[in-house]
Length: 300
Image 1 (spheres, rainbow, N blue to C red):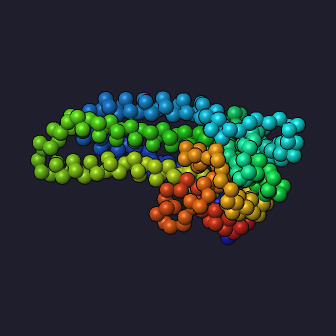
Image 2 (image 1 turned 45 degrees about the horizontal axis):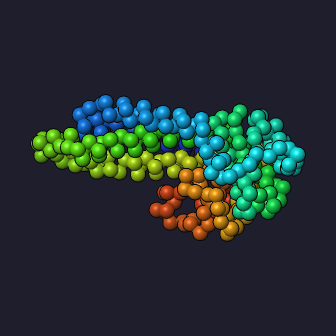
């Protein structure tokens, strides 16, 4: 029977294993496109642009996300019980107390953002406060603080850089191919032409594969946040019940969109969760049923 400690350690190892494969994949894609174009200049430009975009996203993404969610910062006197729970969890976890925001929506949900623990933000919907019991609310907040403590925002930024590099490299490649600068490859021998066609197919699939790896890392970080949050409260059942309540609520989250949906503790789009193996590959969160079963199968 896995314990919370072994579950957290397992998910951490799997996350960094995915990230290692991701880095190897980037190197292979870079070599592939370098061979197809016969130049390294385009790759350098793509890498610099991607890093610049991700740097700006890292510093300002929290403000953008909070704006899209129409979240409003509250003070301790506005919600004393919520603040007490966050403060107690932060003391236990050894984390700075984050800013707390409220989203005026009836669907129960929450997310964490911020570039590091010192600049962290936790946002919860009005519905979350109204519908969850205290132990369930503690489980959700512990999950979000686990994202902060595990530096998932930093990891997400690294993954964004890597995916951005792949997308920009393949975009440059296809633009140059369209303009005919890569057409000289067709003049090579039959063997090289075959290799060129294989490389072309791989270049087409590269952005899809990069995003699949991004989704896989995201799902592992959710499992890790579940386990870390349960370790923090010492009560996995609280988070398990909260996940069930949140996922069963059918009220739509009006402020949710595709760009921010992966941040929430549960997919905010209702009726879109499926369990086929193919659909699971494109999920940023593991199915709630799996998360609940994992939590209830753990031992402290």
